Image 1: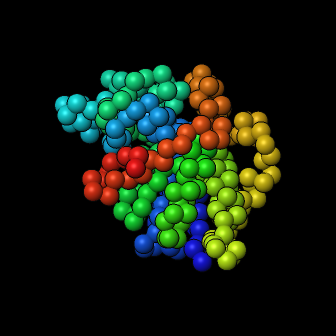
Image 2: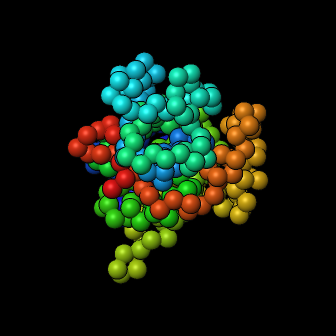
Image 3: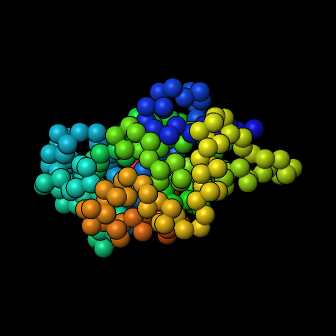
Length: 246
């Protein structure tokens, strides 16, 4: 039986029990993983996650579109920030993005040595589950959180995602997955308690409050909607760190 381990912040990834040969799903609902899905929906060829803003000029000179954010705000000199609804208004067909955010790209790079790495969001949750089930590895779900602290919306997504995996069975009707740690159990219970209105439930989240102050309520609403995207961004094993849609 495959195991599912949840790391509710990047700090926990270094302490995980599942160490080798696993598939990692990185999630940053507000907003990096949702924005990455939106960028590919808009036609992007690839997204290169960067930890430092100092790397941006190098990629600009190579013809990449600069997309970067810090503390919720677009970085000066960037073409776009970290808004999924903004990406959906853009024509990114064939474009390459150099992408750096406060939390999401840090988490992606931390897990970049995984056997497989997928980017997950409520936007692509059904397609993501199908992609992960097709991989016969144990699963580590890594929540980006906020500056290494736990975030409500990422943990809520983890609960929704893990719940769907737990419902999958093999040809004999036996469950494919089992939870490997208490964080996974707590996330599943959190999602069950949240009910159907994720937007209302997440109104108490600190990052929701932060983004509302910056007038990004449309991003919040979009990020908490299920299945607006059928694409699953993943790390390109031949040219990491680079996200593509296979």
